[in-house]
Image (cartoon, rainbow, N blue to C red; front, side, top):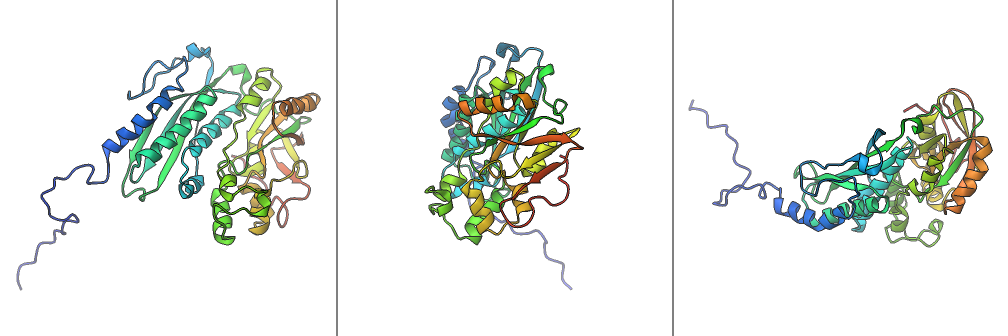
Length: 376
């Protein structure tokens, strides 16, 4: 027998005289620099008096005392846009999802009574396209500027092999402050209070995996389709409607101490989010208190989605739920209407252990709730 041949595998790269570079491995540093340069002016436009650094440092510097927040408690949150990014990619529209991300995160810390101070973004991609990345960052910057939030820093990562070509992810991190005595943590929510709902502007940033399955695969719709249920809007317009920011209408009410609790209705729907602010009470929610928008009715009815699944996967037209004292409920609702919100009496709180009871006739087949909603 002869000696065994070498077991060294052949090189996957063709033998050439071209030197190996980071760009040849799939990472284009020049493209990253180009994307940042395109977004630099938008980022600087968000700088509030609390920002004491500039774009390009290893970390952003922020002085909360310059914003009148000395001695307050910090509140932080992180989230992503999810598979709504697939709709943006199909449409070739990338700036709106940046707005979605910022406004989602603002709503989350608003639930603790916090005002936002600064925001950080993360963009991960397989092959960095400067125009796409600049649009993603620009969307974040525009929303930050609208709501007085500094876009303090971020990260752009090109990772070939981990993300496919054309794929990208967008994640955000927000920090705000709240005075200790104004913290909303469920301790002020009690039986006898009323629930007020505020209308959403569509799916916001949750339920898109199910919505895409129904719209594109089961119903065979295209982005330019105009189903009757959407009242003249295209599917693209309905699916890319921005995640509504509730900071402007709710902040005056928070400063006046008129809100006992806030639930942001995201993944888990009404039963999986209202329960997060309950301790000694159950929530009774009247499913007839609001008109479920046509997009949800189309997805549920034409997609044959069971009601129990629909009310967990989608917000069903309710973006925020407030717990307020019964004596203030109508005046709070009227004030919200006066600020341009669609606000409605959603239900009430009764003695209990944190259950959310969906009562009335739901959209979809079967009961709206099966079993007990899990505490998060």
